[in-house]
Length: 325
Image 1 (cartoon, rainbow, N blue to C red):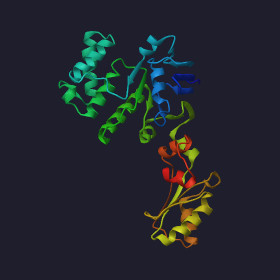
Image 2: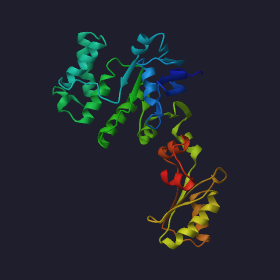
Image 3: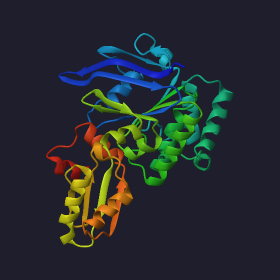
Image 4: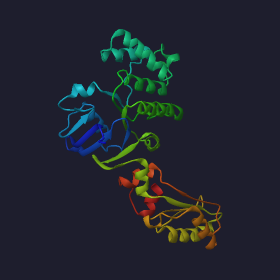
């Protein structure tokens, strides 16, 4: 069965003067999935979103969104997408209800449908109680939810979310995450750019790491973590045990351990050939070496560590890289 792609780009290029923001970006986002676009500041993520939403024209390459070419059929693309940018696009002098009706009117929904859709979205995003207050009196989290609601007035096939939870408190962020997950369950394709690696780890079916305007690697969060490898971590009761613990981990993992004197922790990445190491095996080897242990474990890397290592964002020797992760 062939895959249908909601977003498909090939060799996208974009320059701003001497700056090459995109250098041949390739993307393939299957319909009905959440795809995370991750990269450091200046990697090209927002430029990619602006091209895919027809706000910019590419200098080279092609892209299709919801089956339509972004250059040859921009109006058709816009008819099938929703966009939530980094900055809320709301009128703070209007009420929440008036904002949604205004967006619905701009999208040419009939009057009755505008009112019905606004009421439906206010209820869906738990904003009904504040609906008739000026948005300028709302909290940041409430405004962000309203901004997301505004991008859904026409039930888009593809939703672009550019840094949707930047600056939000944890509770507001969780509400946005729940809303995005629900959209994907209903069949909406979501392209998500974010600085919160936990966000992509929780929401995205697949992730593309972008570095210097190129897609460096794509895969599921689990696949990307597997490329970096797991860690063995040991906590010892005193500083004198750090050396023996590090020696034992070096022999077991095939990599150079990193010590943290303050927390009395030793950590080492499992080399591919040692990936079969188990927690009972780790504890047995430490015991056989006479290393006292307060705690021990094997854990997968966080997506933050994956991002740093696979995009080459870490600098310095192995120990410096490990500490940065």
